[in-house]
Length: 71
Image 1 (cartoon, rainbow, N blue to C red):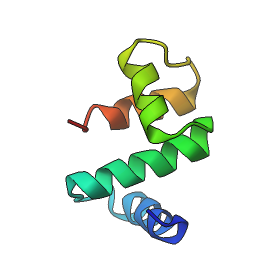
Image 2 (cartoon, rainbow, N blue to C red; image 1 turned 60 degrees about the vertical axis):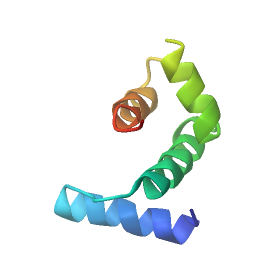
Image 3 (cartoon, one colour; image 1 turned 180 degrees about the vertical axis):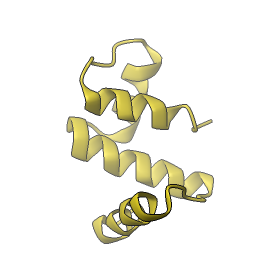
Image 4 (cartoon, one colour; image 1 turned 90 degrees about the vertical axis):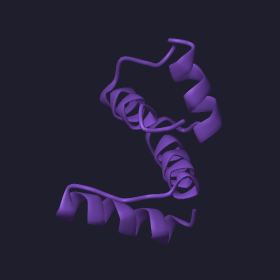
């Protein structure tokens, strides 16, 4: 997902409070957020979350909540 697309989605989420994404878009958005928030790829961040090794910072909390929407 391009940074401009991800930024537009962030703004839409901020404004509307909800997003409707397909699985591919959600994966791309999660990857973008992980790279921005914890400087890891989405796959690496998801592995840490699923292994119970997510950090305790607000960034990890945000990613953990977002990961609950992923299959």
